[in-house]
Length: 356
Image 1 (cartoon, rainbow, N blue to C red):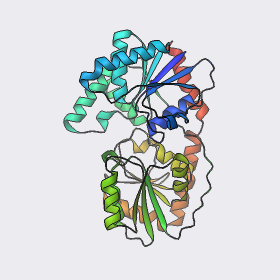
Image 2 (cartoon, rainbow, N blue to C red):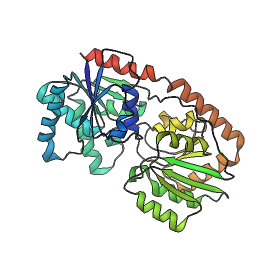
Image 3 (cartoon, rainbow, N blue to C red):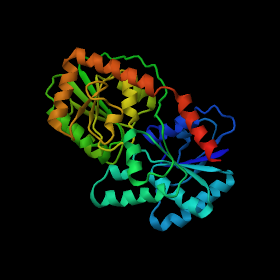
């Protein structure tokens, strides 16, 4: 059984890339062969085990679809592919069009239905894209109950399975020696993750000896980094991209994860914080309730409310009883629901086999 996984998988720190790594690196079946179709650099390939690689550019435009379908067909034939597993809407669209033309089985994992994350005309357009995909594929897998409900709203006939996102357990001992509070965010420095909101919260927070750190690159990195260096050089730092292990060490050494994103499928960064026993304060993005139970496994501030966010940060950093409770409950939630990678990978192998 040969599976082709396509999506924007270039880079190894993004949520989609980590999700795919967890599928292919932990399968126990000797009868499943994986091929990755994406723009993956040589260094990134080291993160995958026993995988064939094909260069396939997902950044296509409408007038390029015919050429992309031809490229995809060459990959399918060359690797004797029986199922395409598409990750994100862009991959889902090209896989659906290919399936209509050539009749191959398609599994779709949207990593957050786009229409739920947008407003106005953009939301309507992406809703119709997803309606088209869901009407023509064989199976959709979703990351959360919120995503499951969103699927049912636009297509209640498609076969759908909810799969708990799982991450590799990593024992990292905190080496914190600093005598200041360290607040961190890990994510692409782009509009969807709201680095400008992160900056405003940092400005609002009045606690002494408190530093805010952003890890990740993106199209807003230069703007944010320049602002931090010019106006808040002793309080705000944009560090750019770091290797996974270094990122986890910084997260482990931090006093709090401030998750500012407004759009998510299922945020692996929050799971990693729970695993590393770092308390979480998060924006109220769509589906946050699937991972954070407010005042139990984390704290949630209302709709990008800067004052509320600053208040919750101060609350966590000054109330040791609350802090300990969030750490204990967050770690227990991770361990009970998101810690078995073998189970995660085997679920997908079962899905694939049932489609053949």
